[in-house]
Length: 274
Length: 293
Image (tube, rainbow over all chains, first blue to last red; front, side, top):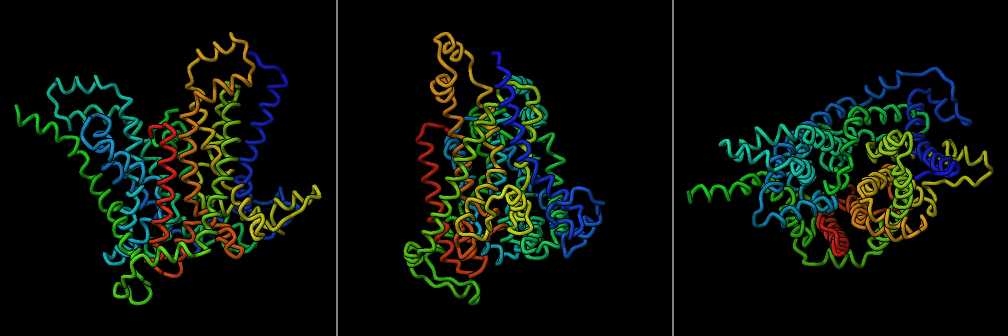
C-alpha cells in the first residue's frame, strides 16, 4: 500500500517526537552524572563541560553503595538460578501433560502475579524475623521466588510449547524416560528460551524496590534501596545521584540487545509471542 | 505394565513438587497467616510476638471507616485510570506507526523499549531532578515559552498528573510492544476484503482492526491496569505520598501502616487483604470479557 509523502512525514515526525521523549531523561541523567554540582543545576543548562568521571568513583565509595550493588548481583543471580531450577520442571509439566488440577494451579500462579506485594510482605516479615532470615542474602533469594516462579513457569511453558512434540516422542521411542527426554532433548532445544527467561527473571529481581525495602536493613541491603535513599538529596548532590542511577541500569543495558526480542513474552506472561 | 502406567500418570505431579512447595510456603501460607494477623491488634513495636491480641473484625471495620483508606483508594484509581488511558492511546498510536513496515522501524522499536528496562525507582529519581520547581530543566524550558511553572510534585493539583506522566514515560513501550505483536500477527484476508468493499482507512480500523485485536488489547490492559494499581516505587521516590497525603497510594499506605512506619501488623494486613480482594475482582471482570489468560 503506497503512502503519500505527507503521511510519511507525519509518521516520522510522531516517531521522532516519541524517540526524543523516551531518550531525553536518560541522556539528561547521563550528562548530569558527569557534571560538577554547580553545572548540574545551572539554568540555562551547561552543554559543554569537562566530564567528571570521578562522580562514578565517588558514588561507588559512598556509604555502602558498593556493598549494596554486589549484594544485588549475588541475590539476583541466586534467585534466578533457583527460579529456573523450579520453573523448568513445572513449565515442562504444564506444557506437555494433561492432568487433573493443571488448569487450577496454573491460574493460581497467574493470579499470584497480579496480587499486591504487601499482601505477602506483612506476614512474611513476621516469619522472617522469627526464622532469622530478615536481612540475609538467602532470605532475599527465597523471597523473590514468590513472583519469580509463576513468571518463569509461564514464560518457559510458552517456549517449550514452541518445540514440536514429535521430536520428544522420538526420544521416548528410543527408550528415554520422561526426565531423560526433558534433559537430553527439550532443554537443549529450549536453550535460547531458557537464557531469555533467565535474563528477564534477573532483571525483575534487580529492579525490585518493595521487597528489598521491607526485608533488608544493612547486611543484605540492595541497590534499589541505596538509590531510593538518594531521594532526599539536594541539588548539589545531583551528579552523585545521577551516577548511581546510571550504574543501577548497567545490567539492563548489557542484556538489552538480547532481551528485547523476548520482552513481549515477559510482558504478557507468555500469552503473546513477538 | 499397570505399575508403569501409574508411574507415568504421576510424572506431571512429581515435576510440580518444587513449585507447589514454593506456592504453599510463600504464597498460600502468607495469605492464611495474614488473614489470621488481620483479626488481631498487633503492634510489633510493643514487644514483638507477645503483643498480639484477638479483636475479631475490628481492623476491617476501622479500615472501612477510615477516610484515609478511601482517599488513597481514589488516588490509586485516579493514577491507574490516567496512566492506563494515556499509555493505551499513545501506545496504540505508536504500534500502528511501527506496524507500517517503515524504514528504521526496528531502531524506533528498540528505543521505545528501553525505558521498560529501567527500574521504577531510578525512573522516579531521574524525573524528580527534572521536575524541580526552580532548578529543574522542565520549568526552565516552560519559562522560555512564558508558560506557568508549577511546583509539580509539591502542588496537590499537579502531583498525581506528574506521577502519571512519569509512568507514561516508563511504560508506554509496554503497550506499544504488545499491540505491535498483535498487529503484525493479524490475518491478511479481512483487510483485503475491506479494500474490495471500498472501506475507508478509518472504517477498516474501526470494523476490522479493533475487533480482531480485541483479545490482545484486553491482555495488554489487564497487565497494565493491575500493575498501575500496585504502584509503589514511583510515588515512594518522588512525592512520598505528599503533599499532605494528597498522592498517597494503596501500597504505600499499607507499607506505612505496617512495617514502614507504624508497625501495626494487624491493621496493615487487613488493608492488604481488602485491596487484594479489589484486585482479584478486577482480574475476574477482565476474565469475563472472554480472554483465556
